[in-house]
Image (cartoon, rainbow, N blue to C red):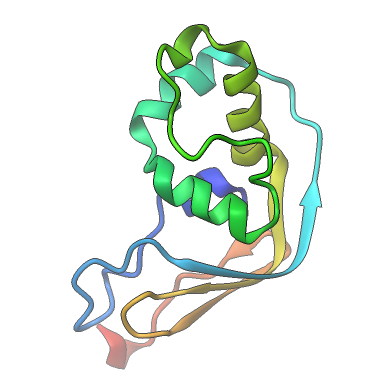
Length: 124
């Protein structure tokens, strides 16, 4: 599961959960793969992200060392910043682990890079 996906997931569909965001991450296996850099994509996705959540997830996985804690001014023309965001969004992937609801503690497994967000009937 890439951190781009993590940034968009919540557990709000569970009964009694008001926000369910951001999900915590416990990673047992992380893979870093080279992905072609596309500055236009990264530039367009940044305003749609919860950047604080992205930074927190990258930090939890040990990949926030060079990433600024907040979006830099004029990020559209800052190639260095865009490359760093690209790295954490698209190149860092949780292969095995869990996503954790911040309100209930319920764990959603990540297996082979795919988060399983299915809930039980009694949780709806």
